[in-house]
Length: 391
Image (tube, rainbow, N blue to C red; front, side, top):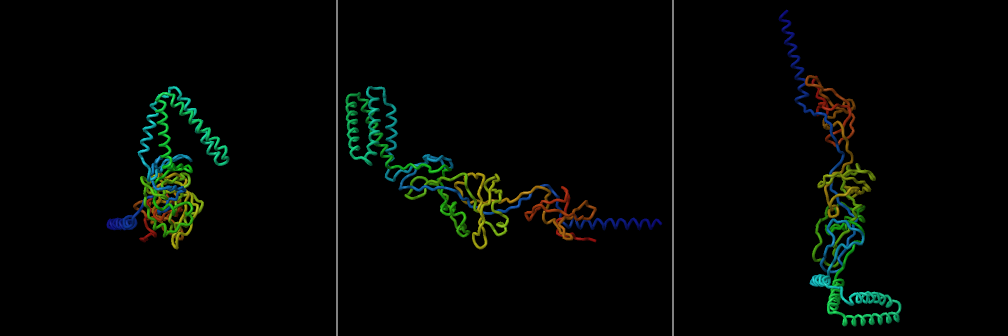
């Protein structure tokens, strides 16, 4: 009897060991993963070209540029942004003008006849403006005005002769100032901003291709062969050379290169999120057009909603397009199996039991991970397509 009991006990030990070995098939030979809470992003990485709504102004003649506004500053319509001095311009005249203006400020104007001279100067200026207008319409009237101007100038000369010497010095300085201002005006062009926008002096040599006029007819071969120069205008310029851009900071776009599968994921008029490789903040955009760029690739045009720093002087960036993001219970795709036509996973309850198949509902997958329903957080699942049956 005792021998039978010993045999039974030995058999049970062997059976328990065998059962443990069976479990080890699942826990040791096969990798497992733990169900966690996380997110999965449906999207892709691609190249993007920044397209700006910008106005380009070119130099009217050879000369030297003087910037009145800093790169990246937003200006209102009509603001002076740039001056171009002709190549023959004598810069000494600028210093002379500063010296004359400084000397004029030092003069004592509380002297006899000074206010009288001021009134006569104002009358002369007004008559000169009238004379210019009369020349266009009435020659006889122009002659009369000219005689009045001569009379005022003669009266001015009489006052200067009778007045103190300092009065003559002031008049001499005014004449020098007028001469210098006219010289500078004749040899300088001041460029005022025709529209409100961001000022940029940086040119990449692709402005004639990457613009709002061409953005619905871009070709992949041409985009691939673009050479970006990234040159900032300064110093000497040539006639016809682009010198400044006024960039609309409200309307700007991305042209993204898409493979066939990527193009099928994007839908026109749909909102998407975009991450730039050199900028941490997520940005919003709206797909407005998708079209063929060549035989294999597509071009997607995205109207951007948010502002990207320095977008006004960049034209090519690496981006991640985020179509959808979902949070929930996250597992590796390699854990998903199919049993009897149903998708699920093999769950290990503990180390002493066989895996159990649990049906799941997949909410989103990026090919590597999936967000699913039907499991519990911290469940352990087998990383296999099908269960390796040990029985």
